[in-house]
Length: 79
Image 1 (cartoon, rainbow, N blue to C red):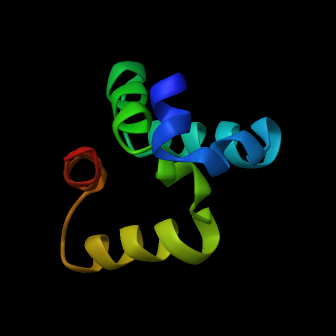
Image 2 (image 1 turned 90 degrees about the vertical axis):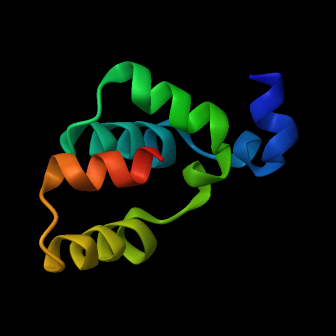
């Protein structure tokens, strides 16, 4: 947790209910398991600061418009 906060201090201001839980749930709905989600959040804690509706979902829709399915999108995001 300390490394995550060092990388992204704004994480301290993120709401568990409004930011963190919805993000984790959405990543799981894309087909990512617990371990990949945890690794992603640890590696890129700033992801928790992005808006699902304004940033991430539109990008995922764009990837899907290119022909990627959910598992391919999840793999792309996890990289």
